[in-house]
Length: 215
Image (cartoon, rainbow, N blue to C red; front, top):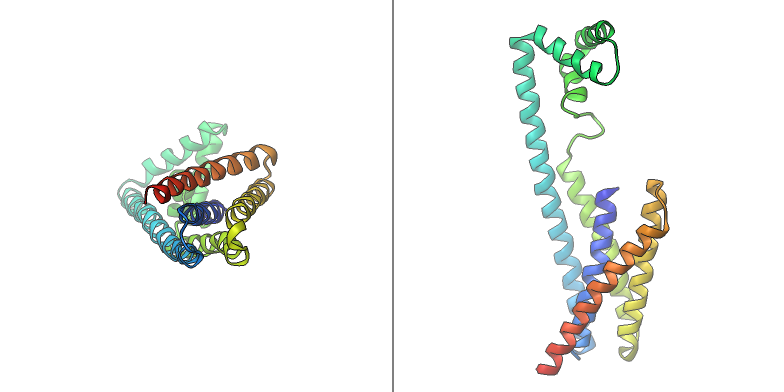
């Protein structure tokens, strides 16, 4: 969910901002579209690479933690039982029952019990670099495609308002979808996404206009 929302949001904002910046510099429409395509491709690859490196680092850390836990279980299993029991005590389980639970869980899967309750690593939360990279690239591309399609379809004279308004609508829709999916309030996340998107696009368009005038 995080990667999908981040990718789509970044795709819309960065591509729309670049299109508006180039268009504000009075560049031909062909150059505007070329910049949009370049933003889509470069952005998708950047998101994929960044997410892969980030999640790979997380996966390396998880692997190192699990290897350390294996050694500790092999060298001092009694201490590991007590360590796991204390975790349950902190969560509200009585000491005697906590030790019974720890022993029973460790009989079945000692490493799995410590990974889940001590390290916070489970099958659901395990880092998956390739999956994260593909998801980020795909969602960025979907988000970036919106402003690019608007730029392709709009007349040259209306390109700036069409891309600006359309991209803000896309951002607002994304904010509402993300909020509803996560079970959060809709209004504030939507306003937040639209505000920062408008700010980014406005600043880029202003810089493009200044550069175009200077050139």
